[in-house]
Image (tube, rainbow, N blue to C red; front, side, top):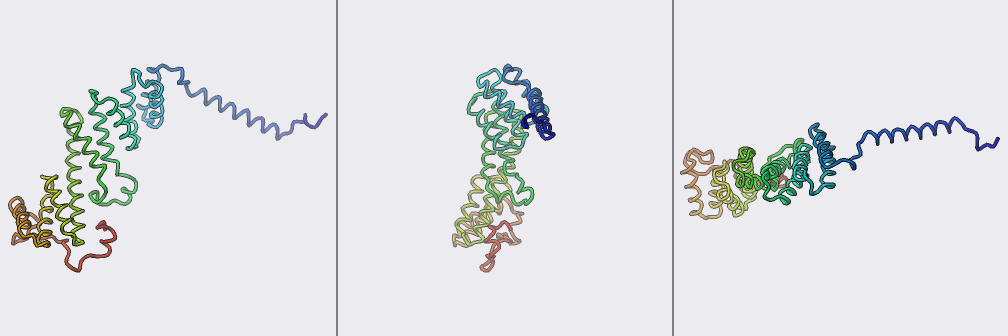
Length: 284
């Protein structure tokens, strides 16, 4: 008998492995429905079912397939709204923003435009709360505030265009929070410049608070910084104007001493520009 016709135990093992692999592949194919045969309504119902089960990655995949196969179908608008929600629940804030902006661009006069505007604002609001911030928390005002500005812009558009929207009350509350943080961000910059003796820059950042962020908790300190900065610059009249506004509107302010003069505990003396503060931009 020729040697090539002899079946060894090793050959049996390899053949069994191949058969088992083929069966597993066939079983996997059988368990996944052939979506190419589904109608738009059937495909959307399947995607929506996955979304309701909170399998968000799978839902995003299903919804994207519906969107690509039926770009102008009956469910096109709802699919895009569902994608905004699915990305947000998956904590993928950049994709949430992109999906919301796509809907706003495609349907600028849609009756449900308040929802993508709200979700765009909400995603930007949470965008900078990443892993490093949870491990190493630090002053939010000291960070770049572009996402906060984008959130404020989207929420403001929502409130202006849809004042009676169900999302408007929460949007207004978040806008107030963001505005306070933006004002505090400017104060942080003013303190930074003041500590380095850049009094013109310090006064300008403090004035920006007073002009653009009135009625925020940052205003009294901004007036105090302006007063001290102008005094350092020998601009007595400007310093007195700032001091007068502070005294008249906040007579009990912590930034005024018993004699009614500005007192800032952190304001540097000639010898107080520390190396650590310089290297860390006042973060430590």
